[in-house]
Image 1 (cartoon, rainbow over the protein chains, first blue to last red):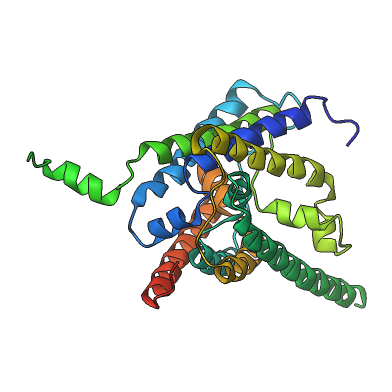
Image 2: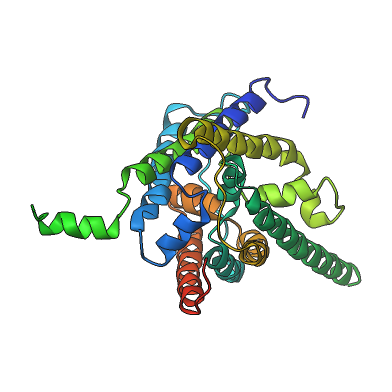
Length: 152
Length: 163
């Protein structure tokens, strides 16, 4: 968007850099390490997610109280709250099958490419295929629903 | 030979590679999210990129809803790749490639692509941002995908599929 603050994109890039460096440093960009965790051979990965969540937890608590509004967008600071429904469980279970089979999740896959793991392109291709399949299907059912209500 | 006291032995068994690299990595992941959030108010997750990027090539309404954020999500993902490149150059001394078989990556990836988008988040969106927000939805999502992933990985290993 043309009316974005000039520092918006650089900040997103820097945030992504730290995020990706952290994923690589944590070894989560290696499917083998994730699979070892899921097979109870190395519990260290617990510290990645909870370490990350501990930091964001402090951020999400402190930012709205100290800063009021985000300087680059003027938006208020909200927590990441999504509505709960059956899709969270169904989608979570499907994701779990994929994560348990491959040992890789989206962010870690991007980072995996960065550590030189070109084989991970298989997983990235799969993720785009899967995301496309569900989007195609949901767009169609949405259009069908809209047509049905429109006909009332 | 000096025998480690029991707590150290247990720790060595649970954490054969120690915990510092995991904890430091996790703190950095949280810091990356924090930098973007403090500037913009956006809590960035990684899996929306899949759909927002598809909006460049597909007119499906499901992808078009992400048109407004697709450019910065591309930059965010580029940053993730670049940050990992920096790690590889500094600590790894060259490229590292996985031995996990391509079919597992491809088929697993398809499930990840469907599941993260239907389930409203992935390991970073639900796991780091959502849990950090004390979101009950995200905690339910994390418990679901973690449990299913553990069962899946154990079953796959028990079937003798390796690597």
